[in-house]
Amino acid sequence: MQWTDNLTVRLARGTSVRALVLYLRAAEAEGARRREVLAVLTERFALPFDDARLAMDRVGGGVVRAASGNPANEPDPVNDPVAWTSYRLALGLTVDDRDPGPSPEQRAAAQALLERARPGEPTRGTEDVAVALEVARLAVASRERDRIRFHLLQAATALSVAAEACIARLGQQPCAVEGSQEWVDGVALAAAARRVTAKFAAQPDPELEERGLDLVGRIVTRLLGQCHAFVGRAMIESARCNLRNGDPGRAAARAEAVVDDFTVLLDRAEADVPFDEDVIALEYLRAAIDLLIEVRGGSAELDALRNRTARVLAGSSLD
Image (cartoon, rainbow, N blue to C red; front, side, top):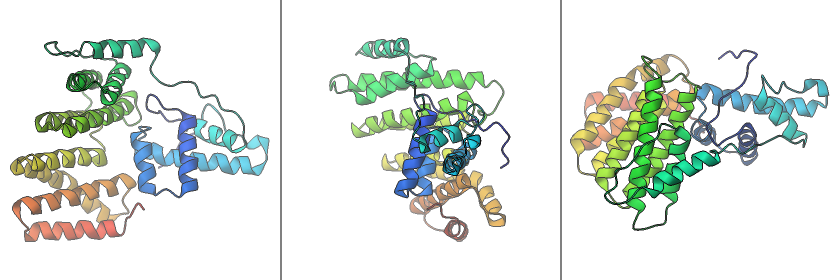
């Protein structure tokens, strides 16, 4: 990838450049695996993989410039904010870190939606992504045993309506542009829907768990659909849920869809070194093949495809 003079990145709501730099500095000091770092950068901070690689590069660049001891090497705070923040933190200088969370008005709107979540009352949505995310956060943290289910249902509705508003803004675009506001909001909405779904699964409530994963899939495929790593995760999560809940046919159908769509990535990876996101996607391809073998038994075709995938992954580890 070639970068221009503008080295800015868009981050998820509730995060900041300072938090991003501090995370990457700590990850390097702890020797965190690349796979773990990429997961945090692309999920918590909602960076596309290209921007995640850029952020890692610019944090290192800021440290190198600080070590030079030459004030003329200070990065541009507007066009290279990650390197600038890294530079200042490396020198022990202050960096403004305003509260990036929802506004008081958005918090109040989220609380009001949750208060309406009662038996017999219809759930209500919101097109404000920040409000929907706050509703989900409050619902997942709820300790009111007699109302947890209604809180979670309200959260799922809020996330769904906010996601549909993001999708509507795309118009004829098949998915969001990487790094756009719709992209980072899609990442955050999918993550919140997963947390709500995990609470449904813990009750346990298989039907609501499947519906929650369907919501995750809708968000991912319509807003983040150009990223095979995100799509693969959503498809395999749903397939495994179907299998756990006694529907192997549906599980196999989802796995087949992954095999059909991801085999082209395998062809490409055999011809050239795959990017990080393609390696992750190939891991989901292998998971899909394994699920098909579990449900339907092995075949020469599946075994050959799995062996090809395993060979590429063996030479492309993210650890």
